[in-house]
Length: 258
Image (tube, rainbow, N blue to C red; front, side, top):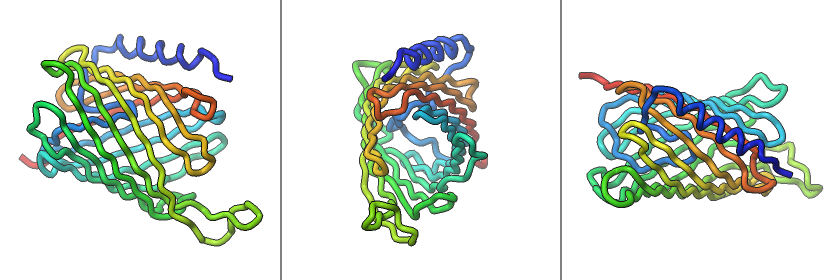
């Protein structure tokens, strides 16, 4: 049975981050990924740390490095580490991704997406996997204060096959599995430099059929022209979802060459 503690954590974290003299628009500390124009020749280094309470304490650290190829596309690599209870942590599957936007000059609906290929570099990896995401951002009214965001994601992973006794086989035999995720978000630019985002998300879980349904709130700020920080917190909407999660994200940007 759920308690009101995650909601209290959520409100307390948002109140705390509001006290910092930061400002931001460049990153989203929730599941939402807006469709945004790419800055050509910009190198971005992003570090994220996520805590999740699913009955066990789990931490994830992920470093992403990307470069803008043009106003449409950027190319990057992500290196995640996972830390669970009584575990010193281990490398998870490294990902190579390309993301961008189809219509960067649009003053209305913006459409973009991401293609990602995950390589079997983790100790518990089950093989090559990947995902594709469609991103739609729709401004509301005039100006740039309000916007709706829709993310639709398809995941393609390896899963271990079971033997006739319902146990995982000791052989290398695996089967491909497709799963789906969707997120709907709303963002509000509190000032020209401060963005607040709320998101509802659903993601299928192919391992034990416990799909995740989450409500998240996030706040991000630009701390100068080249550094952005953000904090997001979320709570599960049913018994099968994580009880509570929190995420901190930091991003450093600089131009490649002149």
